[in-house]
Length: 300
Image (cartoon, rainbow, N blue to C red; front, side):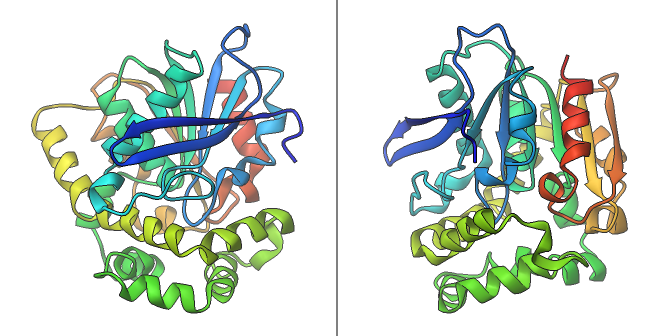
């Protein structure tokens, strides 16, 4: 898996120290444009195993584990998981690898929330972005209804005061992965590559990662909402074209108007396109052909 990729390890900040680990298919000397792929919860960069290998002939592909996840650092404090801090990781990684101009981004779930902030805080760096199965965090929290709360119960569970969610998750991490991840689509765990699924279980078996993931969500319900409101107040909107793909059998399709919600946080006149795909939440693994096709069509 990822045989054509080389590992990297980059320190993105010193206090507290944060090191981001990932894989790249080439270096900045390549003529192929850079493409950053970001994963979601409770996963790692392994979600791209069906997509990334199909792209290496056209792009220099960079995969990274978000802070708090996988092999990257897991700082303790909630402030470390503000999406503004996680977006800075992306910039530091790309700069250190030599990609100091603009780049493409395709991101799923939590990684797509990082990408939203990346587009707002560093508008000159993101050429275009594809966001998978999300609406803006502020919209999703402020428009919560019964159907959303029932489907996304983890948004309200993981933000509870520590150590309650950490303790409960760590007591039976494999069962949580099997029931939570398998229960989000009719095909259950069959949509996951077994090696990748074991990587996700390993993620949940690490208490530091569990705490990091909870802090990610706690930041989303506090710091990220504050930052989002401040951005809107100051007309700090997304300035690059966006393409949104969401699962036809997921909560975005059921509870939100994805295109309208993204238009609301994007500068007028900037393209916001998208569609539902035959998938549940885990779009890169359940509908990799759709994701690959969108990247190849839109990132030119």
